[in-house]
Length: 500
Image 1: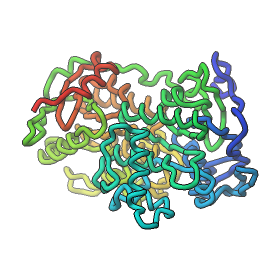
Image 2 (image 1 turned 90 degrees about the horizontal axis):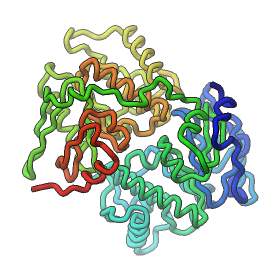
Image 3 (image 1 turned 90 degrees about the vertical axis):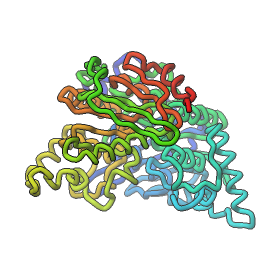
Image 4 (image 1 turned 180 degrees about the vertical axis):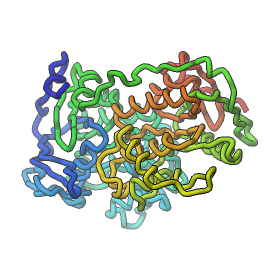
């Protein structure tokens, strides 16, 4: 089905009119990386006080467009119009900031060795007079209070000591914080990718509040429900172009998916699991210390979920299990898909192929180096299977979009000989079409006897798990079967008290 056919579905039509006068206009924008055209003649008007969601597969050009709008990258051709002035090839970063444009990037830009208040000064150099620390602390703490009530953070906290979720909260609050010039347009690139459902809901409510107050918000997300809840219009991008603009009224997920050119027919849209396997305990891990112990059990060939609010010990549990599995030597081969890919997943200076190959470079059983041709064949197979796109295998991993980097980590684990795969919120930044394909891969690999332990902040994904452990304060509060994993049950268990 082509795009024009997909738009014949009942529901909203393409080319929704812009609401009110444009705040920012994009005109014939082009960006190229060598032979790859990341943006191709992009035209769009962003109105004051609206929320525009941007949908598209990984590598569609969404993050590149945001980089141009924020001044982080100059275009090869085209212009941006704002406040009656034309800016050929886009803004530089200083101009964008002076115009009130802020950006929350998918890859966090915080300095881990600085405090939260010092990170405020890093992007607001005007905070330099006597008492600037107090002023920065007041602004950022007030902004955190406004977006994430009950966050528990202080301006004096060192960023490197915070969880990934807390760092994302700080990055978001810093983007909305006003020091001198009014904030007029905020770009949020996958802002909920490290947030649990409860914290994400707080952010989405705040986005709607800001839009109602006249601030334009641009939301890039692969969470289609977030688009439907927050956006006035949905811009759909494919291969560097805008292929549709859909009004949010009466919009359904299927309209967005079809406009993206991704279809779920035949994919694992409905979980199909052998639930009886979940009651066996082929594997068992005992975790914890002075506060008490928790036992995690898994049947061979099962998918076991870790749930709960973010930062409640799920990642620590995965890491502890990983260390226990490694100590067992060759009896249990294990792979780990990191959630914080920049810190724990990718080798930034290595090529895409090298990042994929690293786990398979040495065959521990045969004590010999693997044949390079076999490695390349395996890489090509998984590149096509998971849909890694946007750069050549010899380019560095950072040439890929965040979602495509995550696909490389997934492919690396699934292409290995690991019988146990640990996944730390692995779907961050992955498009809906690829998610459905990966769900199918997980079920197929589990049917072959491979076991998965899966921490995710997306509650819908627990339907694919045989059983789910809900965490709070580093302990398990409840164990739910697949049929019990309703939104209400997960939320209730997430707030359960932990018995000492």
